[in-house]
Image (cartoon, rainbow, N blue to C red; front, side):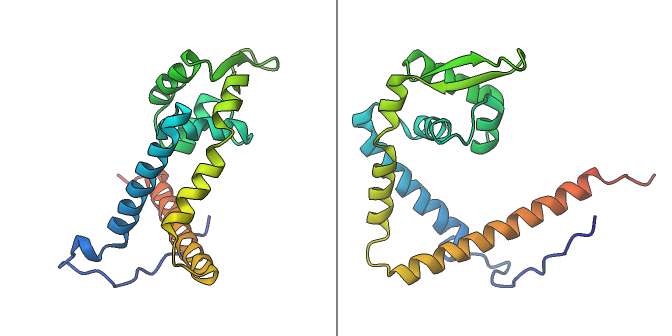
Length: 170
């Protein structure tokens, strides 16, 4: 497989400072978003960790433990424990697949559908508050920059995976 090599930028040097780091700024923004979402979702009985899997199931983007673990970049054991808590709260149920009895599908209960109903509006409100003062053009430009960084990261991951799986010479 022929993979294109990424030419790295040279914006950072060995005199790296956290306050100049795009990664540090993105993480700090994510922490702020997470805190704001958590405050708003408390009234719905959900935590930041809980709404994500429920929304993924509701949107049809995942319906197994393995899919949710991949989506959240966590291990299947941690995801299983989270789903156990959601099931104990009556928000989802596990249903054995009729096509393959080894597969357990996840479905929202009526209570789960009710709990997740307002989450998209809360997310939109929190994001819009954090984007206060941005023009639509700036917002679209920022999304394109972040998408480009993500694509670069995916290419780097693919290169690392290819290197890790290539035969070693003795």
